[in-house]
Image 1 (cartoon, chains in turn blue, red):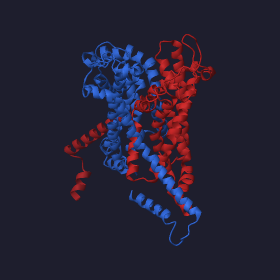
Image 2 (cartoon, rainbow over the protein chains, first blue to last red):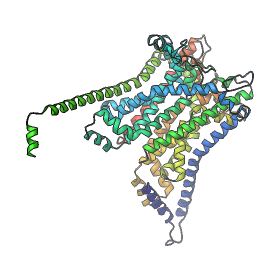
Image 3 (cartoon, chains in turn purple, red):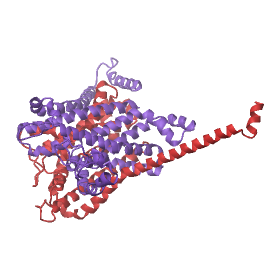
Image 4 (cartoon, each protein chain N blue to C red):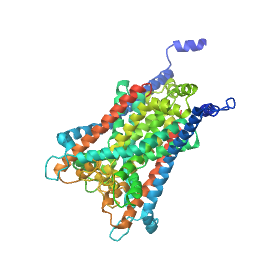
Length: 334
Length: 304
């Protein structure tokens, strides 16, 4: 890094020393290029500053839109589960609960798979298989959310309702647990969690691959030289080295899952209720906003939806910031 | 020394044999365990690509039949009437992409240039971090942001607001890819230009940026492909439109929005159209991703 700084300084020196006292009368081209330099460096500073300004504006805009509801309901907005547009009372607890449960479910399913894929690609895959598999997993991230929604609605949900849910509940006798009991609705927390797992898998695996690539080769070679098997190299030498980056990757996946809108809206069933069973419909913050926005009755209802958006923004901002920080700790800039 | 030699060459004692056996057993156990775990990794990879394959199969089977010339050239028909197309939504998506690129590309490329040139200034570190964070924020929040600033004050939905929301999403993506691409340009090229008496801004724009242009264009295309499929921010901004409209101040149709609206209706004709739209959208996104992949790999094949 100091090397770069030194190089920058050296380069700055080239520009600054162009009009040296040795040549007192500067030509128009020199003056022109100096003005150009100044305009250029100020404009890229300006463009770069737009990024923090944009983030700040987002916070302010969403905060302003949310303010009437937040002022009216205060802290009870996030603890109350009473969402009643007629009585003009709004509490977002079911949506917050649904967001957390569906995202955690997604992570439970996606994390082992994503880590498996990442380790497979960075350590075990034969070269001819590496590129195609990596590209296919990357494509999972490129599929638009609404496509997952359509596919989930017409393909995944019917299969879940007629086969997977009865199988889990009756054949495996998981029905004794409240989580897997009750009527198997098609659109449910379970369906949403499953589609979210598919959607956040590529993000977790991409970041994990990145941090695994940052693990020095000597780390693996040392373990191999000590007689470790291929799995032991991964478990004892590679994963511990990359741990915080992998956790960052999982949190990044969590951030995606928390804010995912369209697919979840189409699959979760959209019901204001905290149900114990994963087979029951629910709501998430994002799906609540998407679903009720067009039929919001009155300013307070609208503002309540924006307040849900504000909570979502706050949570995803914190999760993403923490995740990025962890990833940067591991895969530091070369 | 001599005793050791005698010990090793002679018949192993019972204790030595026991130790050797235990070692062999433990090695075998560890090898089996390793084999199982490696097998599980293969299984994970297979399981991870399964959904994509299933989605593609279903899209082709259910959407393939409705994708024809009419789909691209005709307007939507009311439910009950077979056929029709999504011409307005396709044009709407192109217009939205145009607006968002006009917002996102200059800012993103400018910020990316700054990050690549000033790697370690406090502003650069902050911008890099915030761009990554911004990239992870839910798209629906971008919709609320654009709604509050561009829809609420004027009291009507517009293509402009939709484009602004998408453009805001594009900025961090383009910023980071531009930075990466500019960084790949060898520093010697920049130094050579400076040594020839080029001013700094001309070096940056006509030497460095031009060398990195292929990569930046690819990155921009990938960002546009991702933006093209976004639905959530358009719900409160572009809104959708079942008629032909190219006005920037009026609500405008968009392909992903139309897919969503049609998919949740009970009409078979519309659901079929939604599948067709889904197939077209995925095809566009995949073709761009594939092209970008091929171009970047050819150009920077040293990487990966």
